Image (cartoon, rainbow, N blue to C red; front, side):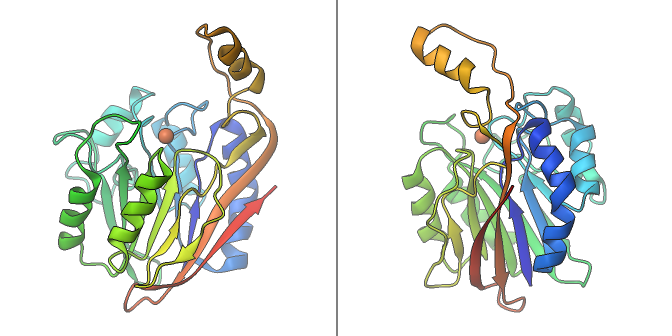
Amino acid sequence: MRILFVGDIFARAGRTIVHERLGELQQHYGAELTVANGENAAGGFGITPQIAEELLELGIDVITTGNHVWDKREIIEYLHSANGNETSLARRVLRPANYPAGSPGFGWYQGRTRSGVEYAVIDLQGRVFMATNDDPVRVADALLKQITAKVILVDLHAEATSEKVALGWYLDGRATAIVGTHTHIPTADEMVLPKGTAYITDVGMTGPYESVIGVKKELVIDRFLSGMPARFEAASGDVRLCAVLVECDNATGRAVRIERLMVR
Ligand SMILES: [Fe+2]
């Protein structure tokens, strides 16, 4: 089957292009499973329950997040509500699996596509130049032992390219795809690793590229020049949707192809 993964949806501009283009992309590429990182979907910082559900209604099956997951307070109670409520929409919104034990919500999801193929999505956050959470490698090992689905997609939300590449090689053959998010800059290193795991260091942002990783460029330049704190606002120019399409064997979960997509 084919899996579409949409990179970091940033603010209104990102949500708008998803609204306008996702349906035709899914149809054109015959995507049976769609996953997106939505941690910056609300004004560039965090995600609200309402925005999460709007994205799910557009045909995204599972939403992953990362370090900005708690930026909008409402999401805390919403992710709590997924507990014991396996069929809720909230259960399809993930926070990184390697967050401290007892964090609200879940770091992985297992479900079935419309045609009945079992799949799992794991959300992991890196530790290099980021908060010191549990070891994503050991957490991935433990989750992969317990997940029964063959088709497994991992969102690796991390800053350092080396950490992402290393985890990709380490998990080769044990996940269908490992897709990087967080840095908002698409990388040109998509490949299928030797044991059948599709890999890319960063899918790229779905949002305004006339910006500094989504934020109005003048504000960021000013902050670099002055060293003074500034309120960041989302930009709106040159909006692009960045995604990857992964094709895999349903029976083995092995990837056969990964393709980078960028839509304006
Ligand atoms: Fe992030």
